[in-house]
Length: 247
Image 1 (cartoon, rainbow, N blue to C red):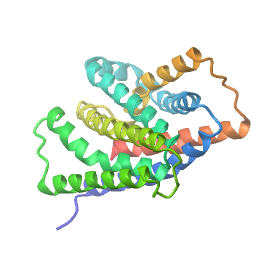
Image 2: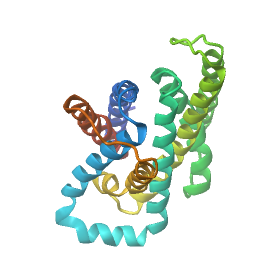
Image 3: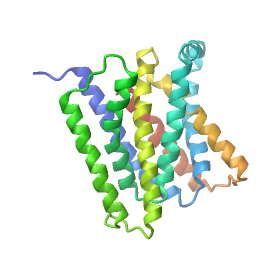
Image 4: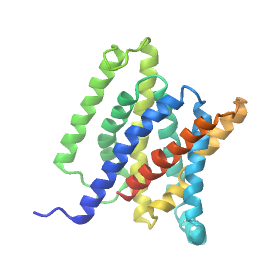
């Protein structure tokens, strides 16, 4: 039996997203030692939004019409995007990138099945999907145990901090799944991947800017740090998320 071409392309795009995300999260963990988390979020996602907004200039009116007709889902994708990214980057401050990423990835399937059952019409998960999702969920428990007991790749000095890191990863995993389902709803409403990339980060950017102003966080950054952040924005955010949405 031949594999349908759209399915194969979608699978390859998702694999591209996963592989590039793994590299991105290592860079995030490194740069967070030098740059404030909210400064990083504000710059990275402003650059990414700017890139895709420029691409939409010829079709700006059509995009506004789509946003107007799908206000609730556009709000949902902004809300879930903000929660997913803030909680994920927060978790990177306390646990190693591999554990954080694995937790988010493992929680995704079972969360997606549960949320899709509520939000997508005629969604009926197969038995295989359900079994795989449950199996990955139990892998979360194993990761949590290894992290909290200091048996992961990087030893933790505090159970409390490890717990906070895992909690951030769990929140990120659940909200990322909700984000994926909302993305599917918007795609079904006629949004293209590049259009979604132009409208999904505004709440995240505004939240970061508010916190920067509220806490009077300095924005100074060296040329090397700025280059790293710009690289993350393009190769770690724009391309992988575009691939995921297209997939």
